[in-house]
Amino acid sequence: MKHRIVRNIRRADAEEIKILGKLGVATVHEAQGRTGLLAPYMRPIYNSARVAGPAVTVLCQAGDNLMIHAAVELCQAGDVLVVTTTSESTDGMFGELLATSLRSRGVAGLVIDAGVRDVADLTTMDFPVWAKAISAQGTVKATAGSVNVPVTCAGQLVRAGDVVIGDVDGVVVVPREDVADVVIAGQQRIVKEEKNREKLRGGEAGLDMYGLRAKLKDLGVVYVDQED
Image (cartoon, rainbow, N blue to C red; front, side, top):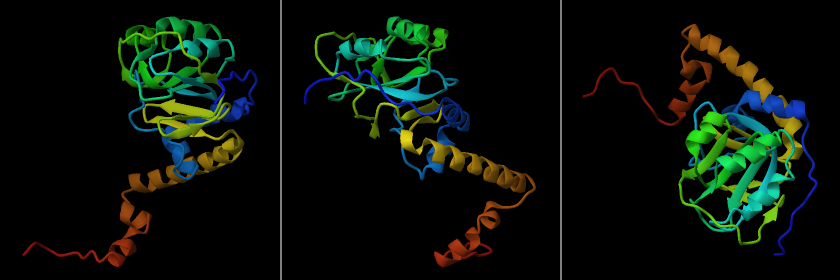
């Protein structure tokens, strides 16, 4: 495959991205049919981290962050840098200096299927990062890769311009062409959950609210007063 850098990408509507961010990872994941969730090893470096924005994708050689530097100048305000490697890596490919460069362009955060370092500095900067690992292992800048091509990050296909949402529950990706539908489905889910929440506060059992007693019966579960 020829390495390439794609300069221009299509981005979703900014207001719809903002709504997805407010809905959060768990709701968005459910709203789009329980799809798009990155592997659970992708964790925020601090629990209050939140992000939602269009993906600028980066494919790097393991242990080599050259293409992250190449991607920086293509980023726009609100973008989320999504980095993966050609083979498994936990090297610290991103740190405070790169975050400073991205922050100067208004980049919203980073999702990287590899390692990061300078975590204390990144936390102080309030720069949201989701990573596979934390490692002080340094990297080189020597090998070609690609920017804004489709990549597989933590088990999910991410294309440039897809919307990436991250919070303490993890990271989920929404295909750009599905954003409007997922916004509607997510908002409907919030309304439904609030109604259910009120029922649960009132003491109604989940078994009744969700119609699960019949399910238990169909599965052959029986109630007995005590064990023999």
